[in-house]
Image (cartoon, rainbow, N blue to C red; front, side, top):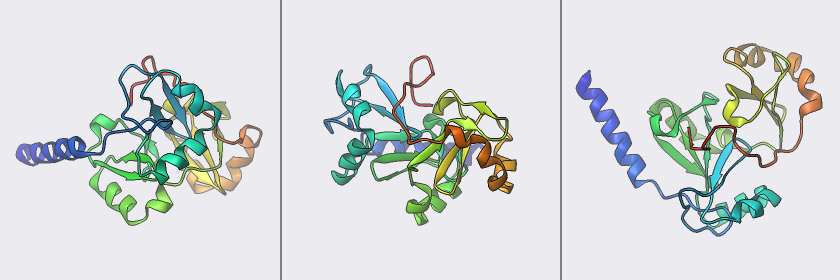
Length: 199
């Protein structure tokens, strides 16, 4: 058991070490530590130098599309896209996959396999979202404060606490209307964690 766990951790470390370095979504240059951090559509972005964050905030979707066309990975998704729950990229037991400029981490190798079979299904970034929990009818301060999310009819709904995902998944049509006043196009925001470090 211990040897198996060690082997998994060693393999994971090797995979992460060989992953393509993240690039700035504006200049497409390697990111630099200590630059600002911005979250957009559940994805965390860092930059190569000061000032790039202001440019990104003006048109985040355009920057992401440009990076994807250039084959650059410029952001880290804050959730396992299969389980739809928050994930710490440094503790992701399933490794990662890059898709359309975004790096996705997984809590298990099974989730990674599922994603890799249908990345267009799980790696989509919606055009509408609600940072408002439709179950408890409570605002969600930021992506990094969400306990997870659920998608329904093209909108992503973020949850305030563990357990909200289950009733939403069973009957999203019942709960989605409770968040209708909070549905809007995603916009770039500052993370609420102290240092903005990837989880």
